[in-house]
Amino acid sequence: MQLFLLLCLAVVAYTYVGYGIVITILVALRRWIKGRRPLPADDSYSPPVTLIIPAYNEMDCLPAKLSNSRALDYPAGQLRFLFVTEGSTDGSTAYLEALRDAGDPQISVLGGTERAGKVAAMNQAMQHVSTPLVVFSDANTQLNARAIRNLVRHFYDENVGAVAGEKRIEVFDAEAAAGAGEGLYWKYESYLKRKDAELHTVVGAAGELFALRTRLYEPVETDTLLDDFMISLRIAGRGYRVEYEPDAYALERPSFSIVEEKKRKVRIAAGGFQSIRRLLYLLNGFRYGWLTFQYVSHRVLRWAVTPFLLPLIWLANLALVLGIEPLSPLAYGFWVLLFIGQCAFYGAAWLGYRLEHRQLRVKVLFVPFYFTFMNGCAILGFQRYWRGNTSGIWEKARRANDLQLAK
Image 1 (cartoon, one colour):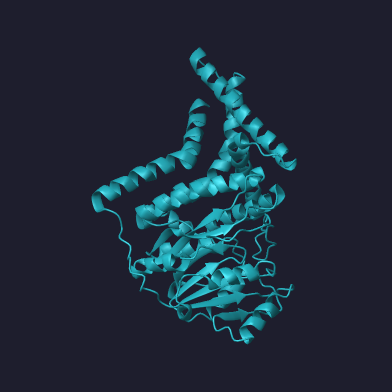
Image 2 (tube, helix red, strand yellow):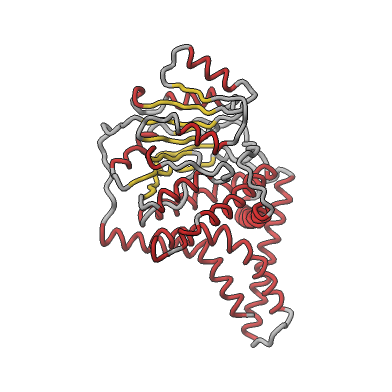
């Protein structure tokens, strides 16, 4: 029982802390041996780009998104906007078509009366793209002015197949704990992505902002929940690098409430299990080498292993405290302290959850609350996936109001 518990603790520690330490060391060694990968500093490299924006019932966001897109620092004649409004019922299609018909040469609209889901819309949109590069961005996000330039510069290297931008969560001082926890999570995630890219490749792009070579796009199964992840990993599996560009970022507000954040996290977790099933071939370390190491360490363990180890750790620890097997006084004292620590951690998480529903924000509870919440949603996501509830048509989670423009 002690050995089992120690192994479980080691896996959890590696997943959330150890991998960050290991990859930091590996990147430092790589820099020492090979140096940093150079980036072209010449802004004259500006090939034609299509910015695809899925916009199902996004009328509330479209004026701000259009204003932000037009302000992007990229030659206007080289940047086109393709809005995909399939099945929208809030006037989004008519609004965009009116702008197009008024003579805006940058705007194209792909409408339709039937809602087939975001992935089906993306597959259809790609059939209308004639530029060598395409950038995907959500309608409810704002991009920094040099986002397109900073993404595109990586494609100067023919070995780069896709580039992931950075997702940033805008959290105000009075935000709920879910929003603050989401922001902390994405800061750490961004750090890992920077290290992943420098070592070998990013293992998964965020759909809020990512770019790819048009010729590398493969139609995605329409029931796919994590289209951005699947697209970028399949490109990496074909031998291309997926780069990371922190200076191209999409800014969005956190989820409107803990209920909305739960809905989003459960869908992402279900998509994680779906992706692992469809990307089983990437677990062949003999063929994919560093990609397999990064994929397992950064994704598979976090999505499919550690959420289920956490309750086992608590139960095994309880069994040792209750005397299920003979222990030395020193060992028994250690396991008692660990059990008390676990109970205090989950107690703080429960308190954070209760305060969240009362709209009270206590910073010290952010980490235990969001950590427990995230792993609980992963287990619920597995249940959703196991039941076959993986339709590509889903209701988006509501975001907090007052989205601020990226500077």
